[in-house]
Structures are given as C-alpha cells and as structure tokens.
Length: 83
Ligand SMILES: [Zn+2]
Image (tube, rainbow, N blue to C red):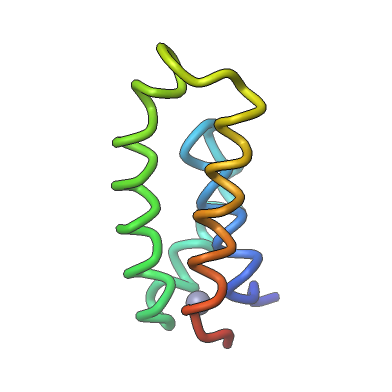
C-alpha cells in the first residue's frame, strides 16, 4: 500500500520525535523515491524542527508550540501537491 503525501508528511513529522517502525520507515523511503514534493517538504520540515527544537525545550509552553507547528503544517499543505 502506498501512502498519500498527507500520510507521508504526518509519518515524517512523527519520525522527528520518535523512531518509526521499520515498515513505516520503508514506506516513507519508498514514497520519497517517487515524490519530489515530499522529499523537498521533508527537508523543510527537518530544518523547521531543528530551528524550533531549542525553543520547544526552553521557551514555548506546549500549547503555543502546537499552535505554531499546526500553522506551519497548514502552510505546507496549501502549497504541496498530492499524489
Ligand atoms: Zn508525496
């Protein structure tokens, strides 16, 4: 079963905070081989995650961090094609 771009985005987002199951990891890699938009999106998300990580740990309360992450994800979904 192939994942949609939206599912891959969620899976990758999850992978930034926890280790994926091997099968999910392989699905992610397989989708990235086929989908340039998701490869680029994953690079952007990793950069955002890296930038926000210190803020998450030191400054932002959890509720505000989630608001920012949701806004960023919605912004990405508006510009990303689906497969
Ligand atoms: Zn995709």
